[in-house]
Image (tube, rainbow, N blue to C red; front, side):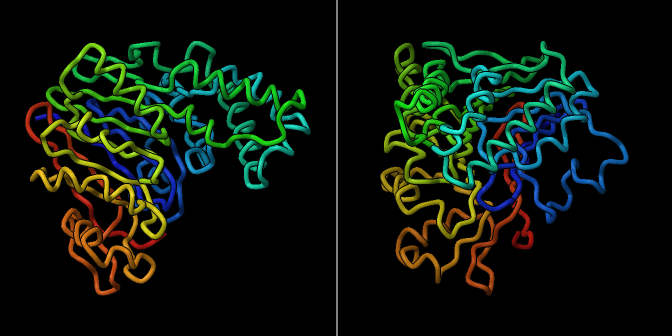
Length: 352
């Protein structure tokens, strides 16, 4: 039987996802690599036989999603792969980033982020022909298919074109002296939300999309479909922050069936209590959702989880509690068959 495998790597509060598709093809969604990422097929020890990367997707231009993305561009460029991004009018954005007014409007850590995006954009333009650099966004009222094979379909559900243009309009207003500060949240509003369909199973990757984006996505669906979206698994957005969902989201995605939720987080700050509490109404109805987190849950740093919420995390975790007081954690490997239930393994890895 053939399987689609998604690996979510433990890189702290950052995102690094890898698709292992059929015929040994790979897809990358965000790439914030750390030296401790042993076993990653794109890490230096494993580059003697270049992998066949058919797409690289930058969900949005934040450092924790693109820190070392430049280092893997050649793997896609050499295989006629594509680079996907959600930065509307990249050239104009980089021009605005060079403006002293815009630079002053960003916090200091973001200045480095702007330089990183400029370097990445330059490398992409050098290595990929224009037709293989794709700006992706959901069309008004519908999704857009960005990859289709005989068995796998990938659609972009968000951001909307309005969200992507609002960000560049904000930069233009800052440059014109009409605004003094950049709303960093608008960058998250430009985050890609991808839906992957393989046979009977559907998984959604949320990037850093905030609650407004999720309302747009589920609202568009509900306009034409009275039933839930029928998703089996979702990679929660923004590391399980309190802004990464709205209370009815899980019912809108999973309906009354149990869902599988993945969180890229360090566990000490996120996932937040609000995020975990949002599953309580479903638990009360007897719906056994499963939550997997790449980061540890530390009892001392998270005293609120000594109660019901902490026990819920223990129940959802795929491994027992270690002597250190942390829920076992590490890279998450999701195996998706063409037919049948999704399976998840989470071997322990050392802290980053």
